[in-house]
View: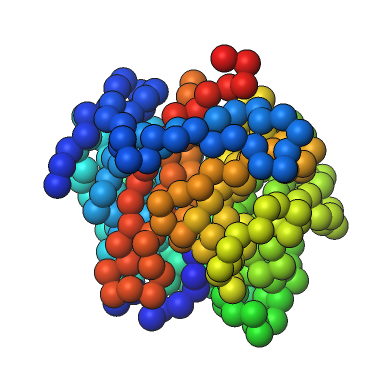
Length: 330
């Protein structure tokens, strides 16, 4: 996700029940991806249907029973791609510029308003019930970007700072308690905090430090309390990309049930697959270079990827695409 206000300026595809598999493949892109430089490929990824060919800077995908929710920053809205392929806007707020939506297990949703500099809490029917603009330190929640929830629905989110190689390390991680509504800064000094993944069982939180091209690992000491970070993975240890984007870096993060971790490489048109110990396994080349995030279906056989063609175009046009996942054991 690029933090700049200047960034804002048909066919229906029927999906199988529960988004378990996309129904229509894209023949021109049907290749499987094997490991490059890894010991053993754990999974192969095959491009499948483009379930939304007319998305606008799509980000922050969230799977729900009804389908897939997507944040569209330049249109200031949340779109539901239903299981039958139909698309509809379920929430919209002028000036918000959303980049993430997360379902609260007890009901309702968190929405990050990247351009509006606030976090919105929604009801199960997508009505805004509360907004958060600052933490207990008095600092504004600027450029909220990506988020991950723990089992109770508490949110850990990145407050990024500016996406500039000359910008100071102003990125933070913010925690909001779903019950008390208290928002606190729990990590700071990050060079553009981006993707976030809470791993409660492993007692850690992974955070993309975009401008250093590092994925950081923070010990999760208690609810809303992090220890000092270490480098979980350095993107410089992945295969080099010809003509790499100058401000490329790790974006959204998602975890497979077996522990493998997928990280979007924003600007370089790929997703990296890492082991749970932070070892490079394979890469997934994508159609567009500005990949922001992904969502993994419960059965682990499909992922949905959000990506944008050009982050400086007027429309910020992008797509949401499905990929089939095949285990190396199959």
